[in-house]
Image (cartoon, rainbow, N blue to C red; front, side, top):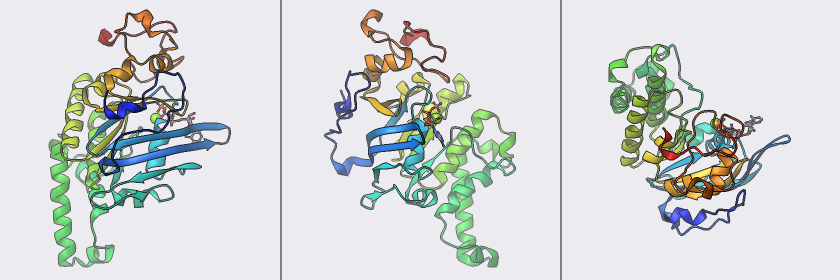
Length: 316
Ligand SMILES: Nc1ncnc2c1ncn2[C@@H]1O[C@H](COP(=O)(O)OP(=O)(O)OP(=O)(O)O)[C@@H](O)[C@H]1O
Ligand SMILES: [Mg+2]
């Protein structure tokens, strides 16, 4: 089991004690005891997690488990009623994210994509990525309007950087096409390029494979691995277990706003608590031991899985 696997427990619904051998210097982000409530609805109920720098950490869980809520707390879109989020932007020391506004968190080095794609549809692919790179530019609108030399130079650099990001995500051939005209899978990759344009050390991807075909999923897996290889830590919400298994270093499983497992992908996939969360099956032994969780959009209790059945790992 990986060091992160120290979190893992087979007790269904158990609240995990926050123990981990990871040295603080290895961490890129740590959430502690996050609680988020909307009236009577509890989205997050004491969620803690740690991500090591350079790690691809997948967050999985049934629909409504609290995955996007967690991202919203990490990026300042939601303010949790309880808990803290410590972020270690390189090369600076730790900083608290709770209470900061989204744009401030972006500038610190946390970027995200959205479950429901948010692009500027009437702008070109290049312009969408430039919006990301402008977060890093230091000249103001006056400098740009006056065409001051440093503003012109920064703009040229921004365009070059945006073009290189389009190349990275495989969209060079779409540079001047409107975002709205791109196929769905390409729009998702364009969102990733825009997020990378902000220069993040932590990239949050919310279901980047949703609505994509198998070939696009394979390309996406390669892209995520490449991004992590450049030193960007990736926090990945994903329902496609094949994709999760192929890229994730560790997996955190949420259910009803709680962390029910945290460990290496293969172990988490066989965890009885995880299988029960997805399929309503308590006894994984009935599967002969090699069953695992296979999820897809809409997976989760009452969302297509037959209670009492276990989807085998090799079934898709
Ligand atoms: N702004 C909000 N107002 C009220 N309830 C909310 C809000 N945001 C999230 N919730 C509730 O919090 C719970 C968790 O939602 P969240 O979107 O985080 O789940 P999720 O794990 O991302 O699910 P999915 O896989 O369907 O995207 C749900 O019950 C949801 O209805
Ligand atoms: Mg979600």
